[in-house]
Image 1 (cartoon, one colour):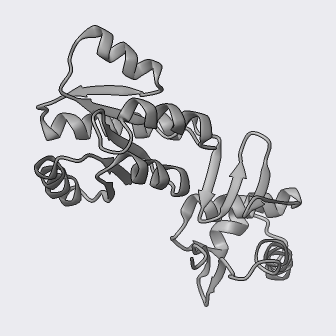
Image 2 (image 1 turned 45 degrees about the vertical axis):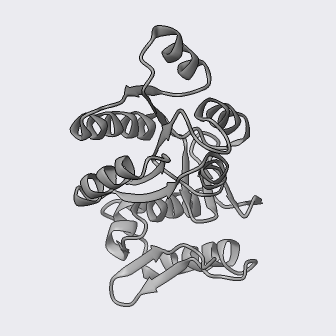
Length: 224
């Protein structure tokens, strides 16, 4: 799980880093609001932990801008020393999903992160790997903002690869998912993979679909 921590208190950042990284979380940081908003808008995160009082741009303004400008609604936990009802309401009105008053227990922070991430997975209708996106509601695929037309079989293959990324999906698992116990043969899957590569990789500078010889296929993020 990838988290963005936007907090200017070095001691709090260090405590969160030691605890969350030991639990296996991948962390990005910003110690000011402007840098935090840039990261939030340009990278993909499962949850954002946002301090209310920040240099450059306060947490309320940042959260409002994030909700207006982001194309994906990432859950936000707002951290603050203010614990009045009005302060909490202001945080929620700005778009925060949860509110944690300092000082807080790191175990409670992790519990709230897990709840929000789980809720987001169940509600999220967009798969994203690097600059490749799939809208599961409309089953529309795009890369670098350019729409890509795919047939239903290619969409099914790509969905499996995106859900598994960066792990490998075996040929057998792909065939079983597509055709059950009666796969039409490896040439048919090879044909669909050729079509998928032609649409997903050929028009762009970096290829994302990688063959793992003797096993299957996987998606890797394009190089920046």
